[in-house]
Image (cartoon, rainbow, N blue to C red):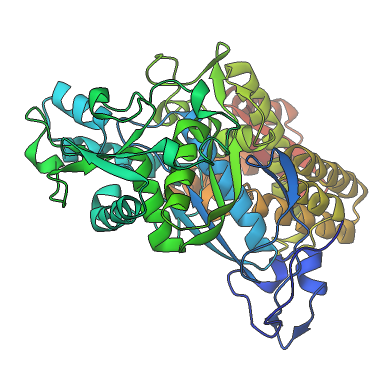
Length: 507
């Protein structure tokens, strides 16, 4: 596989992660002097939705990656279908960082929208109140599932001047027109419209984003700006040269991507359902305004429930807040990260439990190994793991490699080979760290519980184990067995090892 991209500025350091967490390629492929890492080579290949093919990833600027991912429209609390995109691109970001690349990651918040206004009115609250409380719910979901915070997380309402400026460019270039206080993008003025999804303008249905189609030159034209209506809250509108109103959905992302990442950037990501019309319209308006826009389009697959795409409008949702009361957040993250990001995931309780059991096997090895050799850090990423993620972020194969090394580690534990245990523990932790699943990460170390409660629980179990050990020492095996049975009833599994008893919760 050819290495992508030139090596300009090879003397410039790349910062972001400890040297010991780098992949073998990032550590050895570019030279290291006195702990300063050189700009790494990139072997990553990604499926570009615009090209309908896997392409070598060549960063626009050596050593740096710019990424924009469509965040949520905060009309309600998020379900697991919503957060799948956040997790998929969190793993991609972690992998790029693990290779020594400096990643600028932007994820927006759409906090003004027809649905937000309608739902706020139905609940008798201000639209900004409704938007903010659901923005907090989204942030809570991102945090509980261990996604890294974005470099920037702009709100649409904070970027109206940038949107007005972009509309002005489009009008000046002849790609947009004002009508009755609205401003529309003229799709027929842009011959490349439809190139992202491979559609012809003649085959498209009306845009359906406004109830003022009679003002449009073509029903497929889409709204860049929507005139204020008497039924809309006065606070949900802004002054512009075309009258008071609010932005169209598609315009928001183009303007914010331009502000934070510039005219051209590396990766634009989002859910498969956003390809049309949202991403098609983003690309058309940005390029028509004179911006090269994104170089790679990445789209993650859906989470389905009963064979249908999970969505609020259909009522077939599994809210993150609810699911994490039934399973640990780290197990939900594993469930959504382990499949390939472009695959469809059918949500069932059985599949969720199976994923949880698989994660617990990895977790059990890590904790047993730590008891034997300590918390080994800075392990080398296995070549098979690197190859899997370089192949369009192949998490199924990458997770399989982690399980292979955990099994090898368990064999080494049974054989008392501490050197092998330490090597496998370092490798497994390094791999799980890239996936955001390291059991020893502070995010997961306490299992989501209060640290003090964990300490008390551990102390009580240890006290019972000490009493069991004392009973065995005096040959009172009935009492020892009774203590073990009581712990089992409480969900505590006890394992006798050469170094003494250890315990973990049953599942």
